[in-house]
Length: 366
Ligand SMILES: [Zn+2]
Image (cartoon, rainbow, N blue to C red; front, side, top):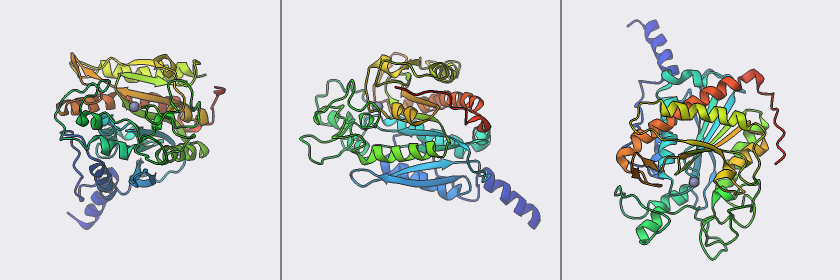
């Protein structure tokens, strides 16, 4: 190979994905630990430095770094719209982190197949919000593929695995705040508790928790820079796509738009390649139940055009697994999630092209 040809090849390969570095291995055989997630992100940042930036956006109560990955197409263009995704706000919702890592893998490693999603949009992804709660939920025995009903926990091992809140131990009788009740809109309303020993304890005040503060900061920065279009928060389990409002029985001003965007994802999933595709329902959060202080409501309130909670499935065919899908289903579930999110993102990108983003017509009076 001539020197010129080698340099051209090197340049192309650096922009499309770098074969000269060792690619970090993405796997769906088992759930990643917090440390493995961090390691995976660092590996991507090393191998794809022209398209990936890691940012430590805060620390958890137990001092773990909370790290976002910003994915671009590497063209250096500033001011693109942004899709912001987070996962793992509740400790026991293990499948959500792997779904987030698969999205990252698709956009970074599988870039050539998905490059149109990064033409006018950057993606910011926080794969694990509740790093402490998740680590605690994994502190029992090794995962044994058992389906656990977290409504009737009888063993200590199941208590670990069913842990939902963060691990803040300051000043209360019991440990932990429900991060998805701690955000600043509608705080304290509906299914939300002031008792620290309950699963939905909303904290002593709005944004009392370092993890919700970290997410708030990203959301505010994206709204202030007028880049935040879609906020997607991954939860489990229940095959639902929820949109505002959750704190009151009111529909979002642009609920039809939410429905249309979400339905694109639902259709893609049901037309996908799976024998037992998930049957997602799209409803406003309040129809599931009224609960204030969610990140979904907050993101919409401060100015994201679209804000959705994706509740990943609780069953496959006749097999119910709740929050803990068996490891042999991880691959299929995260692939299905990507098919849905990809279709929704395509629709959002069409609807909110970069030059029209100033058209924020909604009057958010809830
Ligand atoms: Zn959840």
